[in-house]
Length: 326
Ligand code: NAI
Image 1 (cartoon, helix red, strand yellow):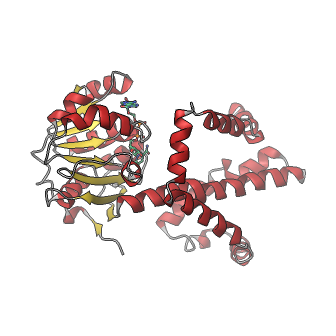
Image 2 (image 1 turned 135 degrees about the horizontal axis):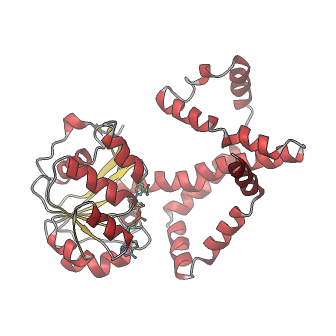
Image 3 (image 1 turned 90 degrees about the vertical axis):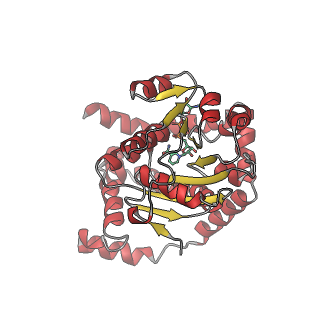
């Protein structure tokens, strides 16, 4: 079982006097920086390219600078730019200013796991990876609820890397809920597994259910409303998290409960397991990482085509129609 840390297990002592550089002020960068400032960390600077995110950082009252300057001037660096641009930015603009004793903090294990970034042995390499979109990171901090995060130490040059990771997790509001110790490899596998196996399987079930029922002659709008537009499933997911996956069943009618439980047994999970085996082999062998990198150098043509195909599926038209009418 992984260790789970809460507010009482962490202090800000190891990070309070450090110069913190946030590289990238987007979804995560803005929320994490605002939370840490509200927690009392005063030495935070934002390093970014000149775009709307830089204007936002200035409007929020942060000191800003180029990625090179902020990197060279900081003790703890947060790498909060998109994972696919991170290796090049790290190599060209961050590494030259990196000094022994610095700390590199990631919100995702991807680039370290697949060795797209290989930091020098003299720096700490840690991860504080919120299990929450950026907006939620801020909102749940402001509402004093917190959100879970995975924390990990990949390289402990200072001997204090875990203390630092926990201090940052506390300052950004994660230990308010739960900071779970997970290696960067484990975080990467869980993240990609969800994206490449769990959700594609669930999406296929929903799309098949739509197409099947429409073929049966049922009204498209009603089918989609039953499937997810009502937000009933979103509400169920919330109850699963709050009460329990099965324990929320009593909130449904007894007919529904019996139907769900008796037919749950009927699904042959062999296909699901086979798909999961294939996904894990592709993640572990670096096959997916290589495919994704190739896709980027090829101008993302397949990615664009896949998105176009998805946006042309008949459900889009039904969704738009219902939205326009409401
Ligand atoms: P984002 O897409 O919101 O990042 C935007 C920022 O990156 C902006 O400041 C922009 O100026 C900068 N940027 C974009 N391209 C750049 C380039 N070529 N050179 C320099 N700067 C560039 O990023 P997001 O979504 O906040 O992700 C940051 C990290 O957080 C990633 O490692 C991601 O995996 C992780 N993460 C993201 C979550 C999310 O919900 N978005 C959840 C948990 C982790």
